[in-house]
Length: 379
Image (tube, rainbow, N blue to C red; front, side):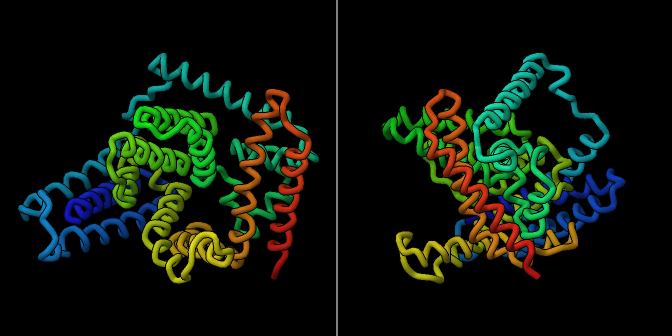
């Protein structure tokens, strides 16, 4: 527990430093305010947990806890590292690798070409109408350019904007599909390592061709850390993964700390890791019980909303009143639509897609839009 506390404490000080650096360098008042709240919360949490709270007598001390000076100097170093990284990124001292490094430039061009081909493959599937194709493309590729204003408003007013915007949830669905597809190759040690490498590479490529938003990169880091731990035969600890991914992402892109998508993505995961395990145990039973599965879905939604709700209110000045109804109905349905749409795109590309699969996808998309239209019209 001592080492875990050190990882969390150092990470939180680094976050606070990065946010402070962004505050000093940005002229956007809203971004500065969001970063200030993020920095204050991180620094306070780190100070209380890392400097003030002493471990129990039966908990072994970590190396950083043995010397009181080290316990102050190392967090201070990470605080300054975060500030300098953010300032350097803002003032343009970071090298733009894509423009100066030929292999990276070629990779970018390849990703753009694949992204265009991916969107064209989705458009080629003969779903029921243009709105169905547009929604399928938004869910799979993040391209919302063809989504009508009516559907956009229905998602926004019902509190389901996070479903329409490509996020970690979408990469999580792709990760689940990859796990299921590669499970047929067996569970031998060499196969497991090959499968983990393949999953990381495909997830990274999907993240790249769909825009590499902050929440997608967060999900990619989580997947990479978990699969790397599997290859090394080590047990993963959720909060260690959380803080390591957070530090890595802010090291690469310090400006993300002021972006709402980044903040909401990590806040949602904090709710899932800290609150959801306790809430889902409030209702006894196993996963085969329909009521238990319903409660687990509700607990997941509430856990996320407890952490993201205040941030949404501060950033956007609104709060989705019917978030629980929306998430209970729309999240499972949108996940089902993504799986169906991915299968339809893949099979249609090879001329093997059966008509019933396209019809089922079309009706599911229409059902989703109808549900969100009804929820958005509620007083």
